Length: 177
Ligand SMILES: [Ca+2]
Ligand SMILES: [Ca+2]
Image 1: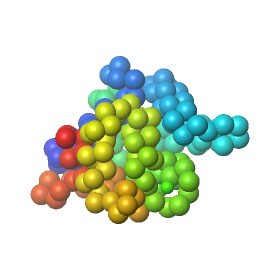
Image 2: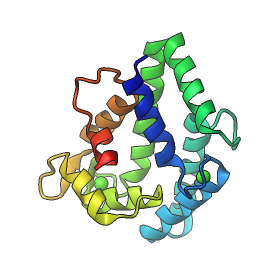
Image 3: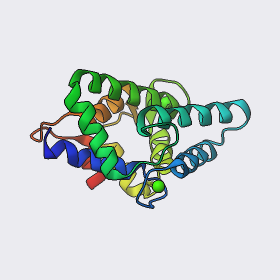
Image 4: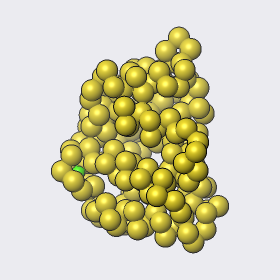
């Protein structure tokens, strides 16, 4: 795998460290799902359903085992191993990973991501500079402040699986802007 891909995984790791304490742990899960449900003003069953779905996502795709803290080195090593062992299976896993988190992020279930959903999702993951997030959203060339869900999901899949540094990477660009 290329340095380009590893650099992107490192950006991904940092983006998941919601409370910015240098490690990914259960605290990041708590903070992200609380922020997300607060911002969307979710209550009752809808709120608890989203919280369950979000925790399940972290446990399935991010933690090596349920709720187990993971350092950046461990995270990069784990992804590197999965990628080297079976690239096809890795792409499949990452496809499932982003399909499932964006099913949650698309709160109104219209299969597109509007500016508010985008801003709330980034805020929930600890990225609260709205100016920067709006600029990132513009990279998707939205129509009436809306981008098809597929476009956003595909950009994330490419971000974590594409090792070709000659290709423009929207998510990488967004995090570096
Ligand atoms: Ca953290
Ligand atoms: Ca939506």
